[in-house]
Image (cartoon, rainbow, N blue to C red; front, top):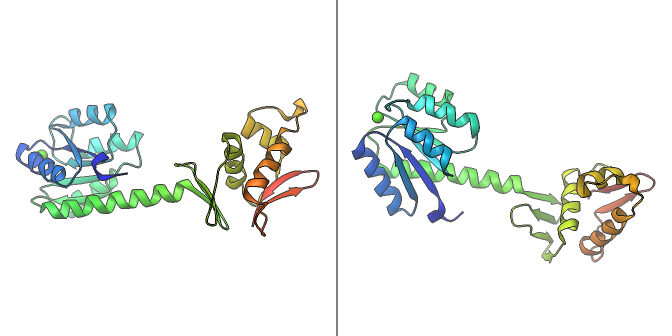
Length: 229
Ligand code: CA
């Protein structure tokens, strides 16, 4: 995610604060939109895709706690930074309780806000990378980019081979029957008497195992296949 594609929603009714935040974010390469009250914030959140939300606590029509809770109802992942003029522990706790990730007391320095934003976005990026790469020994499958590598070597797979490999890896260490594979990868009933699974497992073996000493895909005679180190 490059910085200029990062969209931040600022929900803040104080025009001066909102403009100051927007200006600073844009100077730092972020794209930024402002909602001037809680209802408008909710509408914009529902209509658009944002990567992070900066949410004032005291807002007309719907306060920051309420809005934060509503956002969390449909989206648990988006980072939310709460802003408030009141710095009491109680507010801070309520903020976290309603689902905010971080908290900043007004008046704050812009660079402090920037540091919090960077840290939250980084945390998200790391979590997404970890979620989306399947690994076994030196084999790596990236579910975002569809890249498959074994050691230093890049491996090109067809769509079905890729789907089969992902299914095996998601169940690594577990024997999968041909019927399981047929149902999950091909969406067909294995009773149709096809050997398509064996054929594809062999295609896959040629690409990910053939030239390597350590084989990953193993046949469990009479049962099915298993991927393991
Ligand atoms: Ca306010």
